[in-house]
Amino acid sequence: MDQTEAAVAAVPPPVPTAAPVVPVDLTVIKKRLGGGGDMAVHDSSGSLAFRVTAADAGGRGRALLDASCSTLVTARSSEGGVWQAFRGVSSEQKDIIFSAKVMSASSKRKEVHVLVPPRSSFEDPKPSYILVGNPFQRACTVINGNSIVAQANLPYKLNKPVYSRRKFRVTIYPGNDNILIMAMIMTFLVQK
Image (tube, rainbow, N blue to C red; front, side, top):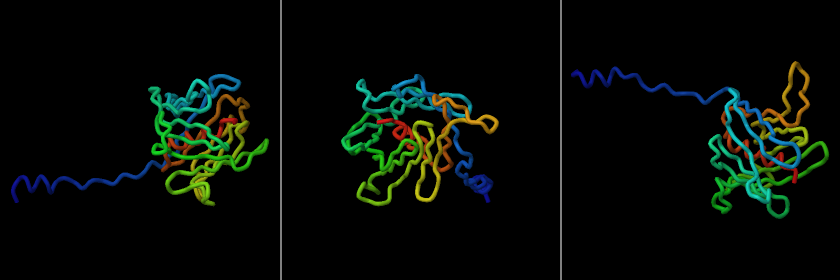
C-alpha cells in the first residue's frame, strides 16, 4: 500500500446530519396601529429576519421582505377573495407559490385553505394547508394533512397573556419552509 492509498483509507466517511429538531420562534411586531400592515419579524436572538410591507402604493397586497429589504414573496388579492402569492415582485402565473381562499369566517374564527400548485386546485377537496384561527387576536394554526406545521399567538408571561395585538409570536416546527409559512400567515392576517 503506497502513501496515496493510505491517505484515502485514513479519511473517515461523511457523517450524515439530521434535520434541525428545534422549532423556529419568531416575534412579530406591528409597526403602527390602524389599517397599515407594516410588521417587523425578529428571530429568537432579536435580529431582524423579515419585514412585511404594502406591496404597492394602493395597498392592495402585501410583500414579505428579508432583512436586507429584498422582496421574497408578494401576495395580491383578486376577484372572489382569492389571494395569490408570487416569488419576488412577479405577478406571472409561472411564479405563483400558492393561492389562498377564505372558506369560512365569523367574528371569532376564520378558516383559510391554501393550495400549492401544481398539486392542488380549488376543485380538489383536499387543500395543501389549512389555516384556522382568529386574525383579530393574532392566533393561527397552520395544518398540513394531520400535522401542525406552525402556530401564531399572543405572547404569554407567567401563564397570563400579554394583551397587545401589536406583538405576537410565530412558532414554525422543524422541517418546514419558513418563508412559505410566514407568507401564508401574512395573508391570513390581512383583514380584507
